[in-house]
Image (cartoon, rainbow, N blue to C red; front, side, top):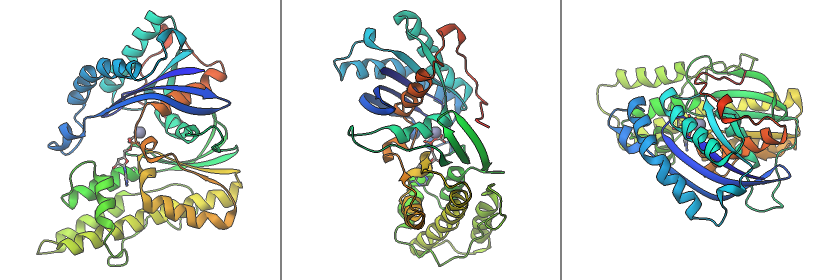
Length: 342
Ligand code: KG4
Ligand code: ZN
C-alpha cells in the first residue's frame, strides 16, 4: 500500500510518501521544514507564526516529495494526516491540505493521532528483514507534550498505565536548557552539554521515583534546578553547567527507566517500544537498553530522525488504520486539538 503522510501539529511541516508491506513501513520520499529558528527569539513556539509558516511551506514540500520519486498521486491508496493533539491553527493547515488532496485525487483520508504516530515510527524499516515490535508491547512515549507509559495489545488497543502529572519529559529538558541559557530546541542542546559533565556533581530529586504507580512528575525537578541557580551569587562556569546538565539528565532519565522496567516486570510484554522526541536522547537509549538486557525483552527505538516529529510516522500509523478499514472520506475528517489517547 502507498500512503502519503502529512504532519503539521507543532513547528515542523513534514510530508512523506511511504510503502507498507506486512506491517513494515518503508519511506520512498520525504521532506521536512523546521521553523525552530523563527521561534528561537521568543523562547517558545508562537502559534500564529507556526501556522503562517506551515501555510507557506506545505505546497513546496508536497511538490518536492513527488519530484524526488517516480510514484504518481493516482497510485496512492490513502492520505494520512495528524488531526491532533497539537496546536489548533497548525493542525488546520495540514488537515485542510490533506482534505483538498483527498477530494482532488479521490482518495480515502485517515485521521491520525500524533501520539499513535510516534508509536508507529517503530514500524519504519530500512530493510525488508528488519525486525518490528511484537504485541503485547509496553511503550514509553516521551516528547515535548507527552510522557506516557502504555500497554499495547495491538496497534489500536491501548491500556494507559500512567503519565505525567505536570510537565512532559521534553518540556523539562527544554525548560532546564533555557535556565542554562541554551538555544532552542533545548533537549538536544542539553544532551550535548551533558556529554562532558559529571552526572554525580549535583543531587536532584527524581519525583515519584518510588511511588509504585506509573505516573511521572517533572516540574519539581525543574524547580530544583531553578532554586539551585537562584541560590548562587555567581554565574556557573562552563564545567559547572555541563555537570548540572548531566546531573539533571540522570535524574530525569532514571525515573523514566525505572518505571518502564517496572511495567516490563509486571506485564511481561514481548517488546518494549520507545517513542517521541526525547527518544532521540542517547543517554536514555543506552540506559534503557542496558537495564532491559537482563529481561530478555527486545527494545525497539526509531531511528533518531523518526523520533522527533516527521511525516513517515504519520503514514505508518495510517497504514495500520487502513488495514483495519478505519479510513474516512475528506468530509469526515476534522482537527481535534485535544485528542488524548487515553
Ligand atoms: O516529538 P517531538 O518532536 O514533538 C512533540 O510532539 O512534542 O518532541 C520534541 C521534544 C522537545 O522537547 C525536544 O527538546 C525533545 O523532544 N528532544 C530531546 C532530544 N531531542 C529532542 N530531549 C532530550 N534529548 C534529545 N536528544
Ligand atoms: Zn511529536
